Structures are given as C-alpha cells and as structure tokens.
Image 1 (cartoon, rainbow, N blue to C red):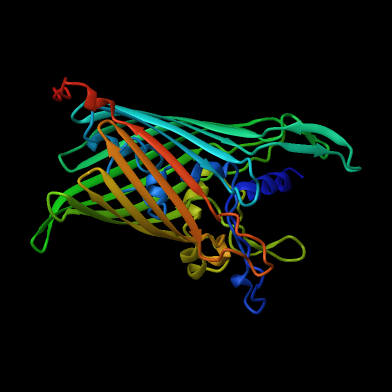
Image 2 (image 1 turned 45 degrees about the horizontal axis):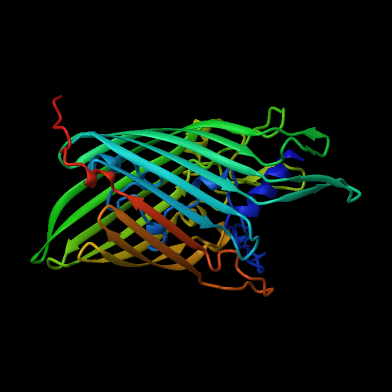
Length: 399
C-alpha cells in the first residue's frame, strides 16, 4: 500500500508521459521508468536554463548555480547575488501546483564562495475520502528543501564544491492510507561537484570552454509510514560542457549540452511468481544503488543508454543587456518520454535581471487526445547582483 501511494504521488507531479503503444515482442521495449520519492528535487527551478532546454551544469556562473553545479560559485564575478524563480508546474493538468525557488551567494574572497537555496513545492489542495467516498477532509501537500554550499577554486581554471540539503515532504497531513498511518518524510542529502573553465581559440575568435560535473542528492532514503521500507531519493549525475564566445564588443553567444542519469536502481523484470528474471534486486543501500545503477537495467546496455537524458541549448546576448535563448530536452519514450523545445528571454539593467522561459512539448497531445501535462509551462525569475552596489572589491585570498 505504501509503495503504491508513493508511486501515485510521484506520478502526479513528475513529468512522466506514458506512450499508449508497447511492443510486446520484446519485453525490454516496454515502459520501465525509474520512480523515486521527492522528484521535485530534480525539477528545474531556473527560468534562464529553462529557456535553453534545462542545461546548466557548465553554464555561466550565477545565483541559480546551486541547482545545476555549486562549484560554479567560486567563478562568479560579483561579490553577492540573490535570485528568485516561480514556476506554475503542470498547469495544463492541475492549476494549483507551484514551484518556488530562492537562492543566493556571497564571495568570501576571490577563491571562495558560500551559497544557500530554498526550494518550496506545493501540490495544491487534495481532498481525502474513504473507500465509500465519504469525505475525510482536505489538505495542501507541500515539500521543501533547504540547501547550503561551499565552493573553492583549486586552481585558476578549476573549482569544486560540497553542498548539504535538508528535505521535508508532507504529502498526506497525517491521513491514514489503507491501514497505515502516514507521516512527513525527511532526509539529509549532499552534492559533490566540479567546474573547469579554460580560455580557448575558435579560429580567429577567443572563447571560453567550460566543463561541469555534479552528483546531487546523495542521501538517506525516505519513508512516509512507520515501516522498515524506505524509498530512494533522486540521486542524479549531471555532466556537460559549454562554449561561450564574444563575436564583437556587443554580441556574445553560448552553446551548451548536458547529460543526466539517475543513480538509483532500475526496476527489474519479474515472473508470475514474483522472482526476478532480468535485472537486479532494487532493495539495496544508497551507496550500492549508486554503483548498481550503471549496470542493472533488465534490457542490458541498450536500456542503460536509454536512461541517459540529454539536452542542449544556446543563448545570445546583446550588449550584456538583452538575451534570447532556445533549447531541446530529450528523454527516451520508455523512460518517461519528456521531449520538448524551449524558448526564453532575459533582460539586465544595473543590478536587476529578469528572465522568462516557455516550454513547447514535441507532442502537445497523446494518442488518446489528452493534453500533454508539460504544455504551456512558464518560468519567471528575478535576480539581484548586490555586489554591483558595493564599491569595496572582493578581498584577495591570503591563504
């Protein structure tokens, strides 16, 4: 009962679009998505990256770097900054699901930075009923994650970071599910990340090549009932690269690509007796699950490669004041089928910045005619670079 409850809630707001036709000749072509608890942790909260197909692990460092790669904070130009982003999530499916995100940073010196982030996710109002349909009241499920990070340069070209995160997930308000009383789930997790930045030449043009790696949400499993069964949180590995070049004094362009893979066990194939016939036992520890995730898909290497999500995007800036963005995001049909294009724009004036993005699904409706839940997804973000207001320069590193 508890497993079914977690799966139901996860599928409510995790962007899984199920294809109607399944190839029964090859069982490894069937839908086999990886589900975890608290999937809100991997929803992109950033309007800037949202306009570029959700790329960001190697993008230009900014206040939103906590979600993508905390190691980027050591390379941020300003001394301090804050950003807030708001996303009406899955509005084509349910009108009152929202994701809010607040993040910021401060530079201790030219080599070190501290950062924080608060992620708040609300699923709107849910009405509870018993098996006879009698009302048991209503509740507004909500989840949050509070993060902090420390980033440091290891050299002029490379930095690393560690982040800690507290996760709180209250989906039922203490309601009883079946015969089991429920409670809010809690977990502690961390990130380990690295960032590399190197000036290069592209023909006659100077450019910056950046490479990023972030393994996020490495943490304890989470439970919503007083049982020994606990669920994985979405430990995720993100790797990518970006190239940025200034065409002239007024025009600059970036091209970026990201690869993502969940580092949790893939559901195996079972026979009619409940015995595993392909894949591996998913009931393992967090550390074992991370290593197992690279080779436990029941379809072998072919299915493992399907679990890699890729996205790419481009950004154009004019005079560091106006930006336009575009991108593409691809997830395999048997692993969730999130496939969409995105568009975005940005404005900068003095210490203020405004970003906007719009998502366009590859398929606006499924084969049954239902509207794609990702349709009309908007993100809005406001940034403040407080360092620009201060005359005091960043303190040189004395270590």
